Length: 281
Ligand code: C2E
Ligand code: MG
Ligand code: MG
Ligand code: MG
Image (cartoon, rainbow, N blue to C red; front, side):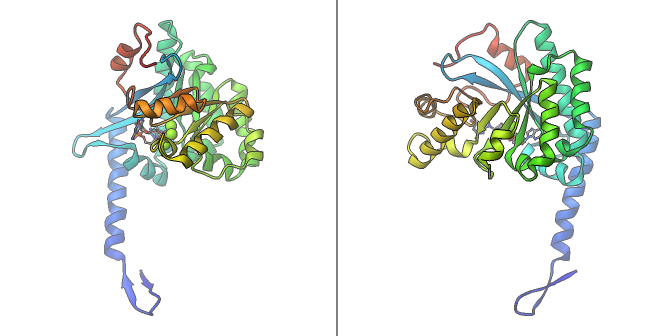
């Protein structure tokens, strides 16, 4: 386990590699125990109409508090879960949990579509579409109240192979969104063929609005692309009123971000939407 460096010098990576691998294995173990012990929770970030300031949906975001480690962010555990395969189990739990919550809101007479992040490994599983159909049926949720967020890289690395799977999901009546749009390599030709409903503009392009002229141009282009393809469009990571104003001017229709709220517990989310009100305008 040595690597030959350019100068012919041998460097031993073993200890560092083991430490990193061990840390990931331990995290995987902790996640598995944590899921079984009920230490995972979903929180919901409001998605807001830019023009009337009302909440139009919720993105389910996974939260984990480990007794030893404290809160661990998805940025720290989703990658490891994908690497070890645990994301299959976790993703399944997230899907059922989010669908159950959306069904509760639906039964309460609220129209509150819920968006769920789906990782590549989950999506590529041959049983994924059936799993989604079963989750909807068990909860009694109208499929149109569930949106699946997929990433560009997931969709575009092998479009032809995924098209059937996407079409099957769209045929169920589930909505499909491309998350972090603009950070991957979207072929416009493929975008036209995909049965998707919404583009989510990545936070990276929102962060430096309104000052950054390139980000303004990119955001404007994505908004126009969405309009041309008759897709909905939402901006993520909106933190300031200036960003909000810029997005209005650029023709965007909805947003999520700390300007209104981050991910909230169900009671906090409900307090925000009950009674329905303009959160910002
Ligand atoms: P994402 O799907 O793009 O989610 C947006 C992330 O930005 C969330 O981070 C959210 O809390 C954060 N965010 C929202 N508004 C703002 C804002 O105004 N400013 C800033 N700076 N951040 C904001 P989070 O919850 O840490 O999740 C990170 C990523 O982890 C997500 O990115 C998603 O890719 C992944 N993830 C989270 N939950 C799940 C899940 O249940 N399944 C899968 N497969 N991935 C998940
Ligand atoms: Mg997302
Ligand atoms: Mg995103
Ligand atoms: Mg993102």
